[in-house]
Length: 201
Image 1: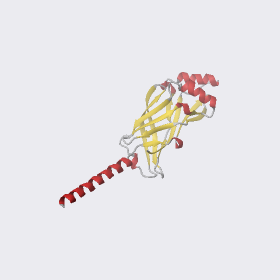
Image 2: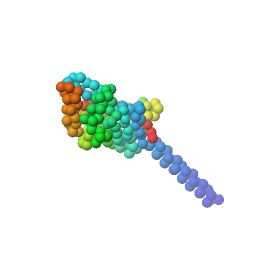
Image 3: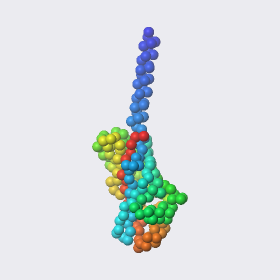
Image 4: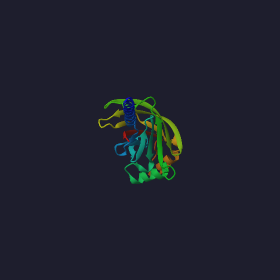
């Protein structure tokens, strides 16, 4: 009788522990970028003062439960609203035959986004590593993270991230675009903004 009671007690404790582990792993599952709800835009400035906003149509990536994240940008998906300009950017600037993607990586240190309440917003300055056109540079992004009503996370830029084309060996590509478009100049400093929506896997 005592053995049966002990066995039953151990079974219940084991079951409770298993359920707790399952719940914990579910609560802290990885977050994945929803491409259809997300946007990454960049601004080109030509002739000294004419600014135009462009974006990429294909984004992917995730935020893992250990805080590490990655954002992958398909450079083939560049969209400026003008087909010939898109083609020139793919071929002459990004050189997509050799460099198909750009990738930003980093880690949220001591921040647990799973504990954010609905409507709560967290502001942070996040060190990240950007790999683009065969070059790697360290940058810092000012972001805001908010938990939405539907349980998704929204990550938006609080300030534009300034990417210098020269740091990624893109100066010659910018010069070629300038010549092809018959422009006097295209700025090397490029403001970049994100509006990302992430959901649990």
